[in-house]
Image 1 (cartoon, rainbow, N blue to C red):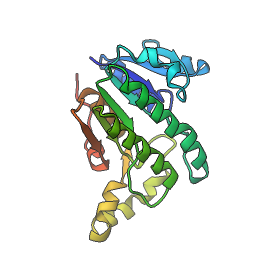
Image 2: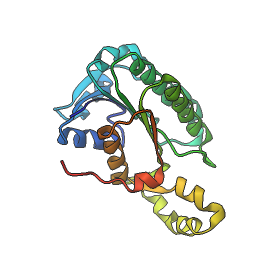
Image 3: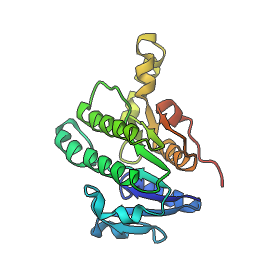
Image 4: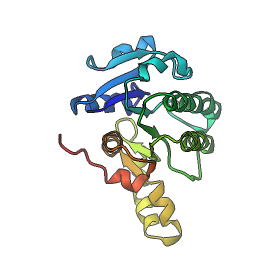
Amino acid sequence: MSRVFVTGGTGYIGSRLIPILLERGHEVRALVRPASRYKLPKSCLAVIGNALDGESYAEHVDGCDTFLQMVGVAHPSPSKADQFVLIDQKAGLEAIRVSSHSAIRHFVYLSVAHPAPAMHAYVETRVVCEHALEESGMNHTAVRPWYVLGPGHRWPYLLIPFYWLAERYPPHRDAALRLGLVTLAQMLGALVTAVETPVDGRHVVEVPEIKRSRLAAR
């Protein structure tokens, strides 16, 4: 059993991931704003604080061995470039700073596939945070999806035939695999695996590995 501190726990992925972690026997503390505390499962400890201010939650990180960073602007688009820096990047750097001064043994970061031909500002904020993780010296896993298919996120299914063709055309094969579509179930499996299999040093989970992710029975 791990003691996991989660940011972004009421978001699209986090709200589905926390119940799974709890069911698998992990102790979960989740950072939330006051109005969002009731969105968490009852067995999850709500930590009231501000993701952009590490000091608002630092004391609650003590006693945890895993930090899971998933804060991100909802419905990202190129028009939100400033928000990516002010929210996603700031929250990520604060989480890394706080964790590096705590007893956290493994940091799991929800990043994004890169390099990529679009969403450059979104990608760059996560590159900055990944570099900060490397410089911190912490053991860490960076999970890099491109687009997650699930409820409300289904239109890219129309692109699957184009991916199929690109994966079979050598000049585009690497990019098509790196920027492939993953399902919500695969993402949840990849994140649970990252929590339950801490690494020594650095591990990057790219799209092909995410697609192979399955939740093992416990």
